[in-house]
Image 1 (cartoon, helix red, strand yellow):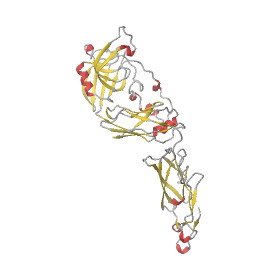
Image 2 (spheres, rainbow, N blue to C red):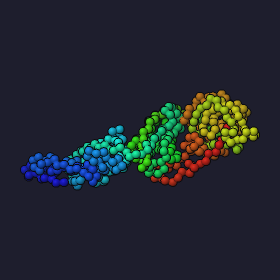
Image 3 (cartoon, helix red, strand yellow):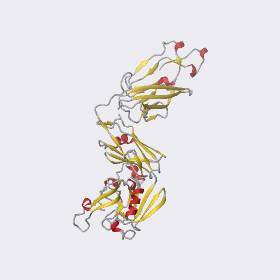
Length: 426
């Protein structure tokens, strides 16, 4: 860059410095230059550090930029430096970036989306601290022939208990950790009140999101994807996704103590009812740990053959059960058990479910909702699986939960994910 000093009488120092020719590199390795002065000192403009900014990364004048190349902003004059860069597309998605400590360059650290229009605002200052600003708008090209990765969020919109995880189902597998990180960064969760939470990869196509502790009562939780147009790999690029908003109700937690044969229901941390129950007998012990209400079925037919008990054996059964609150997909419920009233509060005689008299079962059925927490303690059964048989997410401590995120430094496998399911009878 050439500069022309004004005559002594016109003033000295940085304030009198003028630009002879502004260089704007619009494409990486293929730029364009343009002079804004006819060479006469009288027609030159005052020096502005922003005039010394070049843009790289296939941001080519008159052409669509390659979204697979990082965006670069460079301060070409050592007397000026970049102080801030903001890059976002028309839908408001920000591009993350990194600014060198000396302000000489900035480069994007998150991928650009294909077929998107971006606005880049660069703030600068010269060696005397005088500010400058440059704005560039460009459009990225359409993606190569790739499959759009669809994302479906769950559960359905509605009101849930404070234990309800969010889910994200992908319609194609993503195995590579770096590619998973691209996907995960784009799945945005916001809650009011705010909480600390993270995604956990259940498998190559499914993620769950939960806070460190249960959701607050009466919270609003929203999830959306900003993945559209973003390259994941050579075969996949982000597709569209419908956002989701759910709400939580009261904080309802039911704790069953298999040793004392009592179930206590807490609402907003206050015990509101204690119920005599029976849980799984030896060989059919109820799972310990935290479960989440999956569904409520006013009448359900329960058959022992569906959980591996042979018909005609001493343990077989086939009956209609009322006021059944489901907590595992393999058949564990909290339900009415009028046939075991004499044992409720004293002994464990069920095939794995939590049984109670009909009036209490109806009260429980009417009190809880999907997403409420049902915890079992002091059972001889093993701990509820974290995934695959309902929502056992809360049985992973926070450290192990975070390890399932592609954005954490811990790459060790989670042994809980390999847990096998054991059929549980009623």
